[in-house]
Image (tube, rainbow, N blue to C red):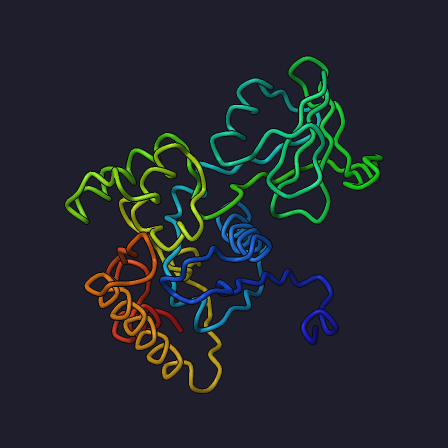
Length: 289
């Protein structure tokens, strides 16, 4: 708020942490997930427009999808430009958008003749795209409750609906990584069955490292000229976070050996595949001002 007061032209991006514990049995809040992937997309596609990123120790210590995924899964649409509409719809499905009769929530799309409604995670309102053949003729925001069109826009930034999209490529990589990591075929694990069927399993994001060959950090999305302004005690916070992550991991491992009341056992991934420790944090920040 202070930055915006002194310089309203400054672009400020938020990158919050998940609102759930490491190795939890629940997924992060959808709004938080949308905000995180929106920030990552802006950092990849419009880096020169970003002036300030605000985040926390918990958020920056958690690994994120590789830059290549966000870059390949995002698209800028401009009015007056031609797009193959069928390919565009196919791409929307591939990055996690769900077909709906009427778009009311983020991550949904609807097709009605020449009109394509989309609600990208990085926008406050859904957008209505009117095509003339393959050319994007008009684009407007619309009210998700009344479905009435609002102001016109000339550019739309489409990004994935979450950090972990259940498309064919990622599901295939997950299945291979699961069998390699846990040494089983997963046929008795509802997580494996759900992801294999491209259905979101509650808390599946906590196995996010199995969807990619390599995970990045938020700092990997920032340019080398990025200046870090750290609050007092950040190093201690990173160390505390790493300690808590390992405690959660140990608890899950102990649960595997016990007679838990849960019908399905939680098979956790090693902490280093999902989070950074103080040593890696020092290495990452040591390369920057």
